[in-house]
Length: 184
Image 1 (cartoon, rainbow, N blue to C red):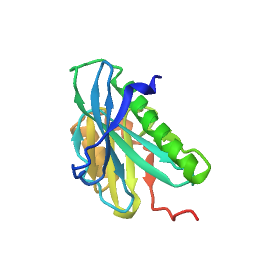
Image 2: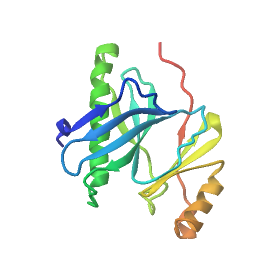
Image 3: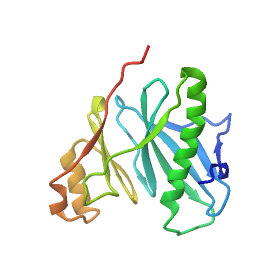
Image 4: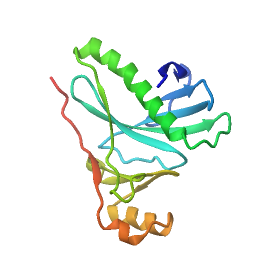
């Protein structure tokens, strides 16, 4: 994994939209721009997006957890490689490496990366996340992100819109993002 292929890109005069933290650029083929969004447990997500994405947790050096979603915004080379998800994972590792270095200076301990648990064993590419204090759910699947008010609506979307088999919906793991108290 060559993390030197990635750069964080932000314009100092651009006002970032709600939840947008950074843009990450990959300078080698397939070149792409990805947007990094943070999800907060007490704010309803408005993140609805068609396209490749990768959710992950970043656990800071002080133990506080943050949940991010990396979204493929522009595939500059128009690549259709099946490895694009692998490159998004590398971009997530790049971001965590940068933040971890800062955390070590600030907290004396490096941060770490963790991926979310899949919806179930039959659907490893699908993730369901509850933003507990906002009473909303975020469904992350290979071709996009959709938000819902409850698990039933998310399951119905998987069946009716994405054509998953209804039998696969019986066992579902819901990742939870709950408010945390700051560490002293």
